[in-house]
Length: 238
Image (cartoon, helix red, strand yellow):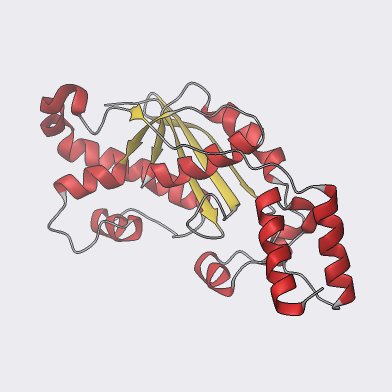
């Protein structure tokens, strides 16, 4: 069983790392099966949250307004997880968001990972759900869902419970064991920041049509700015 790792969990504005943004990070660093360090931060996504995200997480726009940008938070996350496999419940989801943010900022983020969801799907197929909240209820693990650090803590405990119950069975798989870290693969294409002409055009369109935009123009990528310009021109004209 892997006893030294970093458990990571994110809250995001949606499910697509190419379009959505990180709004909260939680990391639990485990060394020799003991929690050695914890870290969490809110992250300003540069856009207004959809109501469903606020309802799901309890995170509000006013909390994010003073939160650091991902450019400030990302180096801390990378340093905390340096040289360690990642643990997560559907770990590729969280990894893909971090990898995309890193690639956009010309940073490297290559990690191995262990996925508690895959273990649960293999050995707990009889349960009606393998979601993190359901599995925490199944094992009696204290859990407050949809906040990053609480989810990360719960995943650490879930991993321990799964290992106690299924590690010896899974070890017969040797290198294919789901308890052994495997290379996480997500291909991320770098998005460059919006150009000055793009920003100027958006500011002019917003001013001309008296619009209150639900995103920060200064934090848009080039592709995002292009989509927003096209949308405003189609809806309001020049």
